[in-house]
Image (cartoon, rainbow, N blue to C red):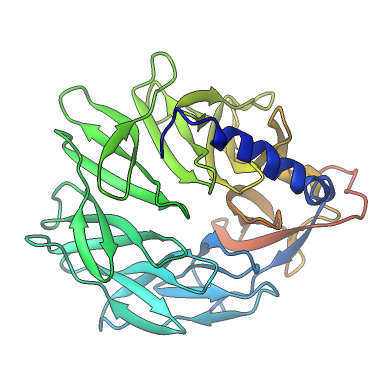
Length: 365
């Protein structure tokens, strides 16, 4: 990827135009609540979504996949006595994540294909790793470390073999996403300045830094689309981030909802639709947000629903949108209060609809 080329910006504009009909319909959404993998799990969270509406995540101690209809299946865990989590799925069915051994505090990177699990090899001298993302060619990125409590290092797996990505003099680094052209995004951390810096890598491992908002000390890159548009957050500290995008190396702060200064961008599709969360200035609670259109105006996803999301007769609160695919379907984390007063988390899939949106109170603030 070269920031100097204008083709990326032209491609984004072309993609937005080509998908304008879909994007217009996506101003309203229906809600599909995912089945829970167990009768009463403590939590179920989904992280990634493919173009067919299949999504992956975790239910208690198990890595889980869900179909577009919400039906669930548990992925096999090849590491006895450990928990597992699925973090990403590509459009040809590759799933990646990790197992975790709580007694040793160590993780092993996992790759699932056709429901078969494989433990990925560890880089030399590393004893723990997590696979975070996989592209359409099966190239996997994530992190690895020497041992429990040791700094993380951005890592790539190509043709089955692991390698550490160049992190310069950073104390730690993380690779969070990879797109179809091999652009890898993530961040590095400098213990001297106590700053996190968003970065991107070429497939050859060359690292490039991304600009931060003025005064920001914590800048993270979370996701990248196939036109090299990157999304993430930038703020003076970890408690006050602002959602941002990077295009051709230029940073842009996304708009904020009234009463929600804190925001994070978590996902982006080819058309440039961005999803994430915003945090209330007063209640410190989060809501799921979508930014779309040429000006990327923020909208509360709960206000765009044809009907409220409900589970077992209880209205769900949409807390964070984690991914959006090229059909404009949005994956979100939702919650409701249990009888004990603690939150129960369930994944929901929001699908574009031509029906009128719910005009009543969305129950979220």
